[in-house]
Length: 146
Image 1 (spheres, rainbow, N blue to C red):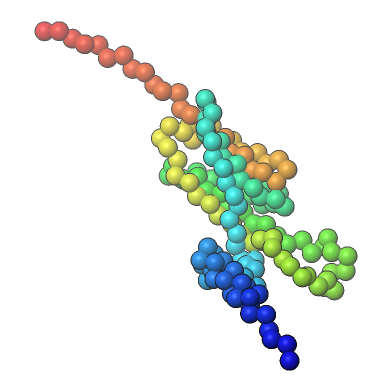
Image 2: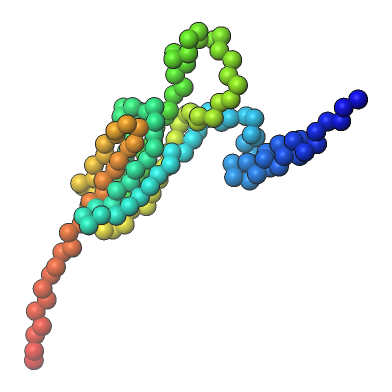
């Protein structure tokens, strides 16, 4: 009688435990389709801060970008389009790693941001939010002598 390969069993168990550490209570064989969080990069240029978010498969109509009380919020939903499958309902997935569902990311904005002139664009699955810097107001103060 062949012995079960304990190495692979232990390896799968270890992988599941590591995934649970990074993903909360979600199990490795149960992909979440309720929510996901797009990857975000933020960098600074001479005139602005730029935020890019990876939102493949999401249309511009499916994304909501708002600023409320100096907090930038990105909200939207990535829907699973099963129409692309040859025979809807007959497919048998062997692995499903793509995340689908609603997402929301929020970022506190610096007082250096010109909120009135924030702009956003979507190109090839990347949302770009440009956060222009405020022009510093210089006020000359007269020094009086007595």
